[in-house]
Image 1 (cartoon, rainbow, N blue to C red):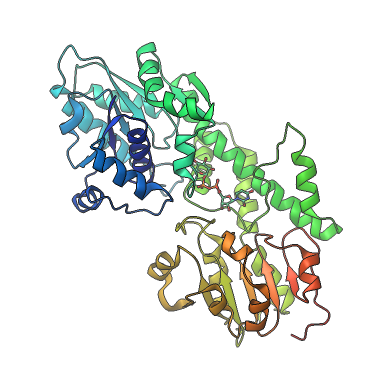
Image 2 (image 1 turned 90 degrees about the vertical axis):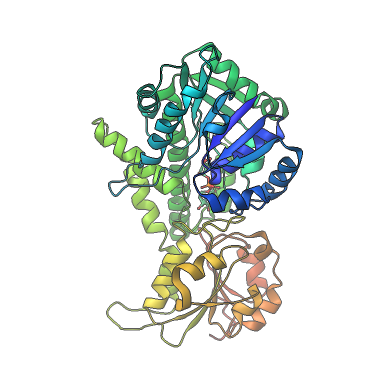
Length: 455
Ligand code: UDX
């Protein structure tokens, strides 16, 4: 099949590379000339494991090409995917200006399609509010009398494993009104479903649009829930590791996505929650559990800071209470295997520590440049995890890079002023840390006070 993928951001690039891998012919479109030139050389402007290899492979095979002009491919395309950004507006809603602009351009370019061509399947892939398919339809129809159908096909990609998620989907959701649209979409996705045994869901476009938001909202809610259970576990002397495994064994609950953490971040959950709250307000259906989830996450993002303050006896009203203290911070990205720092709790942690007069030395495996660009010399940057710890009063962990889990903790203990760790990702077990003489605090388990350690 021939496919236009409009927008070479995160979603567009992953879709373009993976559709090429499935044997389709792909034309990637972006307005940014410099980006198109970079991509055409086989260089990916984003960090995503496996993406560069696929791009290079299919540029070389000729299955994938990039251009700035969507008219180039419109005459013969079976489908055109809209994958442009939907940034958050001030009121929390998704800003649709780029999606609608592309719809207008598609409408104008439709004149290049032969009258007798099959209807062009225009696919909303960007995360868009419920009702967007109808808006996109109206925008295209305003410019053309050629046949087309707008389909909603939300993506469920996770940063860091987006290629695998695309090539081996759990499910593909397609919101369409005709069998022709379903046939085209099935033709595109069948190779992936064959590989993963994933499920195919055909529904109407508004249901597909709502599915995307509902999935992300439920996952966010689940994380906030386990975070609260973890916080409570500490107070009642329970261990969240036991609780999460035992509740997860109930097939109605399931084991995944029950790891307590320092609050969720990233480009999707926070933005999609706000957008769904807004949709709820607009339709007189207050989404009360989601409002609480947002609040709970705001609270959770301070969890490590609260522990640090309690440990070092920080009192309200005392200026610069952490002056003279140095903290090593491992992990800046909002989660492992990405360089994305959007809504990352590490930034809030840095802010809190620096405001209290502390010095912070940071390390991350992919997100250092992004942090440098954002906050510059507010912190110091270490080349290695160990170097970050030299002479620090404590080590804080915000991101679960697997390399941290396998760090040489004896060397880390020696580098620190005292073996003291605040672990926001529960990378280690308290009893193992106790045996090694650490002061160790994590989430939802007992704290180890390191009685033998001099602070
Ligand atoms: C998410 C959805 O998973 C994906 O389907 C959707 O398309 C986009 O949003 P992503 O934002 O890449 O993907 O990250 P994800 O792996 O889902 O993690 C989101 C946040 O939740 C991260 O901050 C992560 O650290 C946190 N998290 C996740 C937890 O704190 N505990 C968990 O058990 C899982």
